[in-house]
Length: 65
Image (tube, rainbow, N blue to C red; front, side):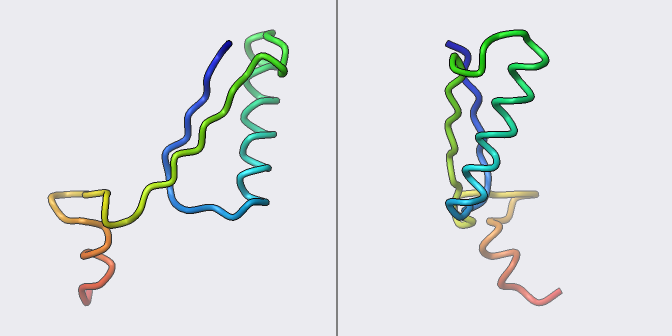
């Protein structure tokens, strides 16, 4: 049972469905493993839980450029 995990921003239901479809189709085509075998996990990350360059994304977005 191959597993694909996406960690990223909040997505709406339509975006999640498209990601799952496209990831599964591509992985199946490339590996030759049937699409039915793939499991896709989507882990949505809050901007306050992600830091880049020593700064939380939530704080970086809030500060003036």
